[in-house]
Image 1 (cartoon, helix red, strand yellow):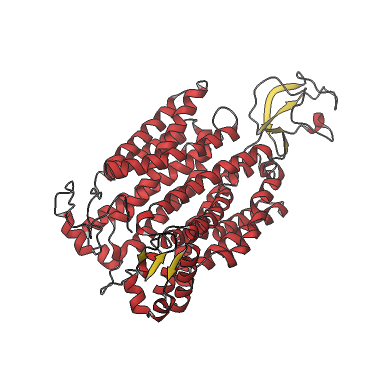
Image 2: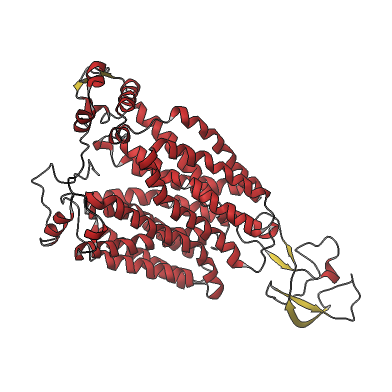
Amino acid sequence: MAKNKDNNEVVGISEILETFGKFQKLQYFYCCLSVLFATMIMINYVFVAGDINYRCQVPECDGSNPVYSATWWPNATLDRCYKPILNHTVSSGSCTNNSFTSHVEKCSSWVYESNDTIIAELNLACQPWKASLIGTVHNLGMMLTMPMGGWLSDRFGRKPITVISAVGSFLGILKIFTYTYYPYIALELMEAVISGGVYMSAMVLMVEITGTKARILPGVLFAYSVYLGEAVYACIAMVVPYWKHLIMIICLPNVLFLSFIYIIRESPRWQIINGRIDEAKETLLIIAKTNKINVDTDILRKMNEATLKEAFNIRSYARKEGFADIIKSREMIKRIFATFLARFGTSFIYYGLVMNSVGLPGDKYWNFFMSAAASFPGELIAMYLMNRIGRKKPLIYGYLTCGALCFLCAVVPESKTWMKLALFLLGKLVVSACYTGMVTYTMELFPTSVRGSLCGVCTLAFGFGSMLAPLTPMLAIIFAPLPFIFFGCSATMAGLLIILTPETKGQPLLDTLEQVHASSSKNRTECTTNDNSAYIDDDNYKY
């Protein structure tokens, strides 16, 4: 038995993890700090590979020290990938606005306004696809590492993967020593593969050290760490625009995460599941001591694997269900199809809006900061509506509203700066709410027997959407409103697909495919509340 030192309340051994205290607060802080830095690294390319002003170089007029704002540049508006042809009657070094003919030609060298981004240092002028590909490659690495990170954390533990991913983010510093494009993009991929693992391992660790009554808290704090990372990165970039200094600021501190070896604790649930009973007992004793819970150490140390699993309600299923069973189920195929495309649309819109925020009228740093800040209320809105109304309707109306806002943003002219920015920020707020809601809804739609596998499939969809998002600014070159038209279509499609899925609020948390088939034959809108032991309590959410 265990009892709290403050009120001497005697509780069972299983209540060690149910008691929220200093231990959880410290572990949350460590995990969220690593996620914050991982987020800054994840979106580093937004400013590091951001566009800058440049023009073609005219050797006859520029001289040995060319500057971007040349007084002799012709008054006519020119494509920055083409240079004006000099009138041959003009002597070298005496160029004026009238020294050029009306003809232009492609140029092979450029003069940059600044060297704040890699566009200048890697000479990427007039190659927008190369700049966009950096973000795509980074998100490709994230797409690969998220499922891999989940598997590795299941295999080797939550703590080692969190530590390796957090510390490994330091290797991004190597990018400042590259002077050509392809080595840089290779390092970008490596950085993403190493650092991305912290998202899965840290989140799982936070959930597994949390009691049932506070189980929704880790998800909220995790999301806020991501949003805060975006906002902090924007603030740093405002003060330190030079890309090498920016990379140093977000990568160098990751070395300090080596301290996690000593201050982060492994998940006791993972230790119990993997037969590390002695280690699990030591971890539980540390939790009890930190949270000031008195524990009868003799009883705890005498418990074997079976009694520990029983105490913490850890069980396995007699029959393992897999993909062979899933593809035979029409109901599961329908749910997978809807959630796969909805998760793809969510990430495509969310990170697409992040990328395009720097292209809005006004200061790009301030726009990016406001875009990040707009995500914070979205989290609270999602929690309130999903607990109050349900899962399905808020998501349907949320996606459709987001689609409408994106379509409106596409048709509002650039001259209406504040109207366009307001529509953009509202769209970001709504998609952030859908982002959070869809994660919870996905977990409830799938049965326990295949939930991990199918959530992994949805993670791939999410990664694919975020991989395509950095390419959307190139669409604006073809037609300025095109990115927002694509976002609007994706959101509308996601909202319509959610109609195919059932409401899960107040419904049983299903364990097997057989239960899914049985529930699909009933009225999907009916909420049963009699069997409290098998139902999801929205205030005390259980996975």
